[in-house]
Image (cartoon, rainbow, N blue to C red):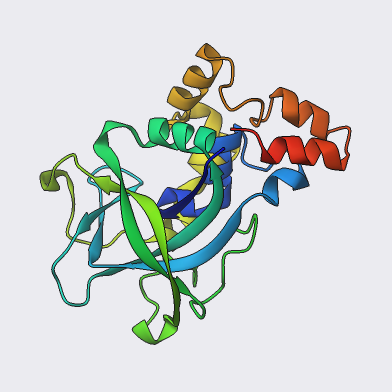
Length: 224
């Protein structure tokens, strides 16, 4: 089984959105699920984040600007199945690419397991550069925008604004009235009868975990 590390800079910085994609629901099905992911604030240099026109989500492009950088989250512990779902969720507007990011040791409130970053979090572009205390360099994958610069605005996308004004439409009570890309993932999982080996919210491994036990946790960790 492969373990993947990804850098997220947009809606997937919010744990409920990430969980909805990889587990089919905004909350981890069990505490054991949540323990599989390690989430830390990080920064990607030589790239610029833009707001996508008429959309709630952003895009990132490489940039030659001296001070170009993007705050986001570094997520370790993703499986092949998680990446499969994330690729479907991101769609044809993005391509997954390898990048090097720096872990941030002093960027506002760190992203703990299951914690939603609000104002003051990694996506808050009002934070001064001094808030970035850079640590180790980590190789990761991220989703680079490939759908054309004409669809992008020059202004920065603001994560705090998304959490405050938009996230409810994605994973809140009103989410049933909108798709936001989740349906593509749900349909693919249903068609292939959960290729993640049951790691999803309704999978066989999750059902075993509901009964508890260390053996079931090991089975979850080994699931694709």
